[in-house]
Image (cartoon, helix red, strand yellow):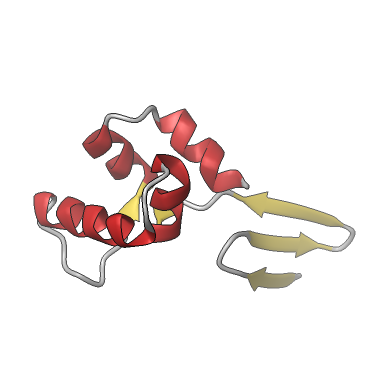
Length: 83
């Protein structure tokens, strides 16, 4: 069994088959792609979400939290994370 990861995809290789897992965390670049705004805006928005949810600066924002805060459909957010 072999494990690997990159910023875009997480994969687990079982002999000849590869199983992909969707990301659950949102990064500023994802916010940029979803909203069409700048990456700086993405950092600001994630900061606002962390403050709203009373999270520490090192804690991640999930797709569900982002979707709930912004009002963007969760499936739409997940579709952007697959690419």
